[in-house]
Image (cartoon, rainbow, N blue to C red; front, side, top):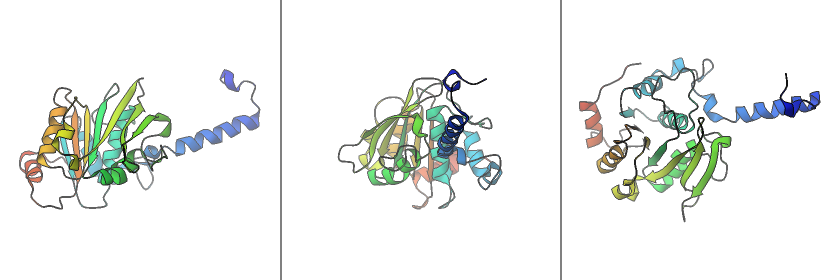
Length: 236
């Protein structure tokens, strides 16, 4: 039985609508990752799966690995799931059952724009070319004099309501990370300890999550040693 809107449509019109729908679904970049089969199938990304699963029992997580292994993709993917509520059936990590307040941050305004924002929102002025589906992006507010950088975006959540994601950068200093409670914080590249501790405080009252994805280019720093000596390594 066809929906009322299609009851009087011709076969050609229905086929055209089907093509349009398939194109829109194909544009959901998040659907291209961690599938059942194909070159990006989950079994090839054991460390990513372990990182995701660890979120069910650990509030603090660190994905520390070499360059070009997909750390940022993993962070953007999980951020998108939490913002939208569109968890796949196989997801074994933490789930939020309502809209969330979140941050995503990088080292500078420029790297946040060129890496973190690009992976989540997409190219400036082209919502949906990143991980978050265009249909779910309600509003994007540019940062004043930010040269394409965004201040925050509002994202539809599957249960109703809107999640809010703010974009930050470490070069803003610790005080920029003060404020209201957050459910999720994703830090791409290693943060200064003061920034990390402030983000941890923002998630304390919500029992929220904080995740870092980075390559330890600066060696045995305080943040690196803290995870290596006090953390629990998860297995694939």
